[in-house]
Every structure is written in C-alpha cells, then in structure tokens.
Image (cartoon, rainbow, N blue to C red):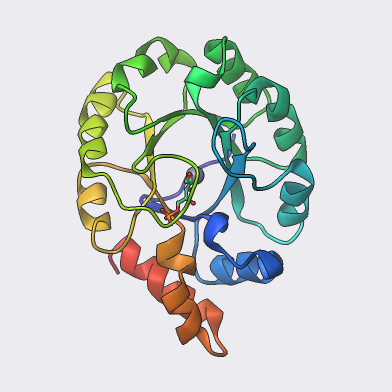
Length: 228
Ligand code: DX5
Ligand code: ZN
C-alpha cells in the first residue's frame, strides 16, 4: 500500500493538460510539487467522452514518480480494473452504480496493493458508502457531473464530507470538479484530503502566461490551491 505524507494532497487532472505533450505536462506538474496524478478514464458510454486506455497509463507511469490516481468512468469497471492496475495504478476508484458487485471489486483492488475508492456523483447520497466501509480506502466526491473538465463547482456536495468522516474517521476524502484557489480553503477546512484540479492548474489563461516556464506557472497554481 502506498503511504500518504501530509494533507492536503493536490492531484492535477490530466484531462485539462495539453494532449499533444502529456509527457512534458506530467514532468512539469511533478517538478511543480504535485502529490498525485489524477487520470480520468472515460468510455463514451457511462459518460459522453473518451479519454485514455491502459497503454497511455503505462506510458505515463514510465515518465513520473508520482502515484497514479485512476478515476474510472466506465460501464464495466470490473473488466478494466486489472488492465489499469497492471499499467501502474496506485489508486483506483469507480462509480458504484456501474458495478453489480462493488464490495468484491473493492476487495480485488485492495488485494492488488492499490488504494480502493468509490465515486459519488453530485446526486448520489453519501449513505450508499456505508456497506462498503470495510473495504474502502477513499471516497471521491464529484463536485461536477462527470464527463468534462472546466465545469462549475457544485457547493452542496461539500455537505457529504462531515457524515462520511463520522462514519469512518480514517476515510480519505477526495473532491473532483471545479476546484480552484477560491473554494479550496473551505474544502481543506472541512476535512477534504485530496483536491483534484484540472483547469485551475493546466488552464488556458495560465498556458498563455506560460511563455517559457510552465513548471513555475503550475507551481504557482498548485501552491495557490494548497493555500501557500
Ligand atoms: C470530470 C473529471 C475531472 C475533471 C476536473 O469528469 O472527473 O477530473 O478533469 O476538471 P476541472 O478541475 O477542470 O473541473
Ligand atoms: Zn476525475
């Protein structure tokens, strides 16, 4: 099992990175102080978008020491989970409504030495997590509807944090969608451990400002989210 040093962890979401130079983007966020790399896997069926396959994840793994956080937005997570673990996943989460046997899949993920998580959509109640607690390392709270980057943060989702932590105090809470330096301080205060951020790190405004040094641009964005 991978160990987590100090919270909050900042996880840049590669969905918002430049798809023509992903290797450079990954090296830049690593040098800039990212803690985890968030990789969105979409199958064009569970969500209306297509992204990366295991061959991409394997290639990403080869250029970084960052741990890989694989967010599965697919209709058959049990089929693809072994592919992504073989490719180098360190954390894997899936949407429980996509899987007939979520308890079994979480057990499988943990048996491979990988952190296991489920994802709650904005409309999913936190209570569905309760039966899964014995085999759960983390919960990923979607603060946008899954499928695309660059959407607006849905604040109501934050109300799920306290009851989840009351259920299991050592549960890791991750939040994903619309996270930026403005809403991050409140999320950290409420006990969120992992902040996923796509547009607010890799975004176009920053990209234009990059000029020659993309690492420094990303360092400023990551530090701003972390509250430094
Ligand atoms: C959306 C993805 C997110 C997305 C976040 O389905 O799960 O990880 O990349 O992007 P931003 O930070 O731009 O909302
Ligand atoms: Zn995601």
